[in-house]
Image (cartoon, rainbow, N blue to C red; front, side, top):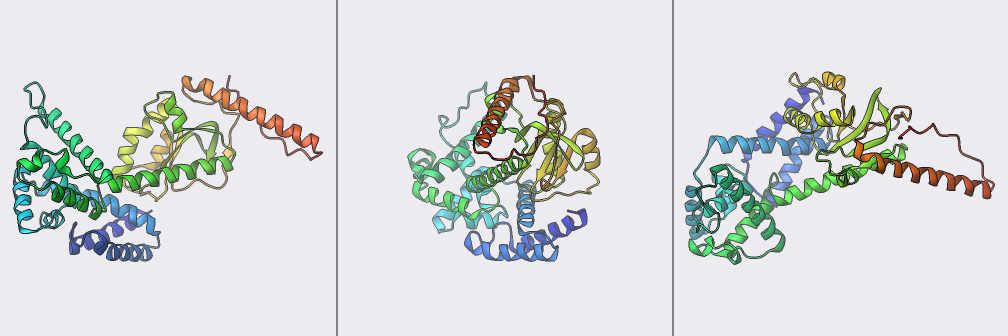
Length: 369
């Protein structure tokens, strides 16, 4: 996607958000006008709905972070407001609208505030524990609470002693938190599950396409059994050329590649892949900004990273190129090659027995010894 198109899409999204608020009309009431807006932007800019939806998701994260920085309210103040609103019959989602934040973000702030005011047994407050460690433990505990209560539907009063201590009805607190999770289309455990599922879907799509192209590879699951911390989605046993670029690995990204995403992924993942495995290709299935001045994709290609929005229907297998897999993958690679040779031999025997013509000779496989 050209930068000028991306800027127009972001501007349209921001205009819509400013007119409605980040938490206004939550849940089903928000869904219909949101979808209509996304469809309208996609039609105007001649792009797909999925691409615009991915940009919307990323932009909402940015807006939420910006609002949180601008209007930083102490958590104990938010807790008092919630306690008062609960008495007045106001929901946590409605309070999120007043604070110009997303429902899930406000719910986390309220739970963190309650934990801060809770009995010392809830979060250890020993002198030797640093402030950063306390924050990390509190944040992780809140995330666990969110996921557990949303999944099991158990009342928070059962394992959340703060509820009774501050005269908060456990069932009401649970109901408000679940409502915030369901109403938030940007963050939260429900959104995380959807993103994870979409990511797995596109990884499966990539693997199926590689199989159709007769490109042998090691999946990320196999690589992780060899205890590699940073692993591409597919490490290629048979290298291939994509648009003239030699690739030893393929990474699948079920998202839009904006500037922040590209730079973050390069720093956290792609750079280490090139150093350990060699050059490769990254697929941003929902497109990417191709001409931003802060990201020189031509320079990326020179460093060994090709960025595309889809894998072409035809690639050039390069079995003549030595495989650049980590040493611990050697046994696994040889085993897969041995199975492939056995399968080819068995197929040839069956063809001879059935008097079937032999298929065209395949290119020589790479020497993996």
